[in-house]
Image (cartoon, rainbow, N blue to C red; front, side):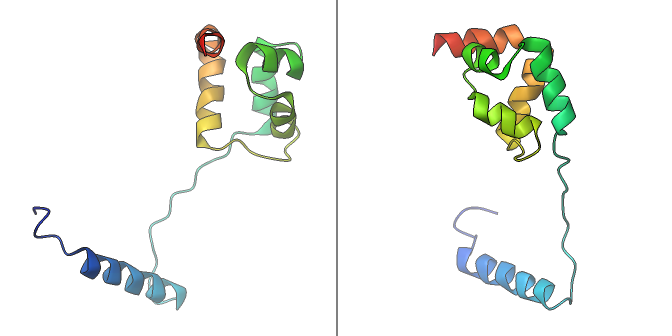
Length: 102
Protein backbone atom coordinates (compact mmCIF):
# COMPACT_ATOMS: atom_id res chain seq x y z
CA UNK A 1 0.00 0.00 0.00
CA UNK A 2 1.44 3.36 -0.97
CA UNK A 3 1.08 6.55 0.99
CA UNK A 4 -1.43 7.83 -1.57
CA UNK A 5 -3.60 4.71 -1.09
CA UNK A 6 -3.75 5.15 2.69
CA UNK A 7 -6.83 6.99 3.96
CA UNK A 8 -5.79 8.35 7.34
CA UNK A 9 -9.29 9.58 8.20
CA UNK A 10 -10.83 6.17 7.55
CA UNK A 11 -8.12 4.42 9.57
CA UNK A 12 -8.62 6.85 12.45
CA UNK A 13 -12.39 6.36 12.39
CA UNK A 14 -11.91 2.58 12.36
CA UNK A 15 -9.56 2.79 15.35
CA UNK A 16 -11.96 4.96 17.30
CA UNK A 17 -14.82 2.57 16.57
CA UNK A 18 -12.65 -0.29 17.86
CA UNK A 19 -12.01 1.66 21.08
CA UNK A 20 -15.74 2.32 21.51
CA UNK A 21 -16.51 -1.39 21.06
CA UNK A 22 -13.83 -2.22 23.65
CA UNK A 23 -15.27 0.31 26.12
CA UNK A 24 -18.73 -1.28 25.67
CA UNK A 25 -17.23 -4.73 26.34
CA UNK A 26 -18.00 -5.99 22.85
CA UNK A 27 -14.42 -6.86 21.96
CA UNK A 28 -11.07 -7.43 23.59
CA UNK A 29 -7.83 -5.78 22.58
CA UNK A 30 -4.35 -7.22 22.68
CA UNK A 31 -2.42 -5.91 25.66
CA UNK A 32 1.23 -6.03 26.61
CA UNK A 33 2.22 -6.03 30.26
CA UNK A 34 5.66 -4.67 31.03
CA UNK A 35 7.05 -6.08 34.24
CA UNK A 36 8.45 -3.15 36.24
CA UNK A 37 11.92 -3.50 37.66
CA UNK A 38 11.57 -4.40 41.37
CA UNK A 39 12.95 -1.98 43.95
CA UNK A 40 15.20 -4.74 45.35
CA UNK A 41 16.92 -5.19 42.00
CA UNK A 42 17.41 -1.43 41.64
CA UNK A 43 18.96 -1.30 45.12
CA UNK A 44 21.24 -4.23 44.28
CA UNK A 45 22.39 -2.54 41.06
CA UNK A 46 23.10 0.71 42.91
CA UNK A 47 25.00 -1.07 45.70
CA UNK A 48 27.10 -2.90 43.13
CA UNK A 49 28.20 0.28 41.36
CA UNK A 50 28.11 2.89 44.15
CA UNK A 51 28.19 2.92 47.95
CA UNK A 52 25.49 5.60 48.23
CA UNK A 53 22.86 7.38 46.21
CA UNK A 54 25.05 10.52 46.26
CA UNK A 55 28.00 8.61 44.77
CA UNK A 56 25.63 7.12 42.20
CA UNK A 57 24.52 10.65 41.27
CA UNK A 58 28.12 11.86 41.00
CA UNK A 59 29.20 8.93 38.80
CA UNK A 60 26.19 8.54 36.55
CA UNK A 61 24.29 11.85 36.66
CA UNK A 62 21.02 10.35 37.94
CA UNK A 63 19.76 12.45 40.88
CA UNK A 64 20.07 10.80 44.30
CA UNK A 65 16.40 11.60 44.96
CA UNK A 66 15.41 9.65 41.85
CA UNK A 67 17.40 6.54 42.78
CA UNK A 68 16.07 6.77 46.36
CA UNK A 69 12.47 6.93 45.08
CA UNK A 70 13.11 3.93 42.83
CA UNK A 71 14.77 1.92 45.62
CA UNK A 72 11.99 2.66 48.09
CA UNK A 73 9.24 1.83 45.60
CA UNK A 74 7.68 5.30 45.65
CA UNK A 75 8.26 5.55 41.90
CA UNK A 76 9.19 3.18 39.12
CA UNK A 77 11.68 3.93 36.38
CA UNK A 78 10.21 4.58 32.95
CA UNK A 79 11.33 2.36 30.05
CA UNK A 80 14.43 4.51 29.43
CA UNK A 81 15.33 4.34 33.13
CA UNK A 82 14.94 0.55 33.17
CA UNK A 83 17.16 0.27 30.11
CA UNK A 84 19.78 2.49 31.71
CA UNK A 85 19.71 0.40 34.89
CA UNK A 86 20.14 -2.80 32.85
CA UNK A 87 23.16 -1.30 31.08
CA UNK A 88 24.54 -0.13 34.44
CA UNK A 89 24.13 -3.64 35.77
CA UNK A 90 26.17 -5.14 32.93
CA UNK A 91 28.60 -2.34 32.00
CA UNK A 92 28.72 0.52 34.54
CA UNK A 93 31.96 1.83 33.03
CA UNK A 94 30.22 2.61 29.74
CA UNK A 95 27.53 4.68 31.45
CA UNK A 96 30.08 6.46 33.61
CA UNK A 97 32.19 7.28 30.57
CA UNK A 98 29.15 8.60 28.67
CA UNK A 99 27.97 10.63 31.69
CA UNK A 100 31.37 12.25 32.17
CA UNK A 101 31.66 13.14 28.48
CA UNK A 102 28.42 15.14 28.50
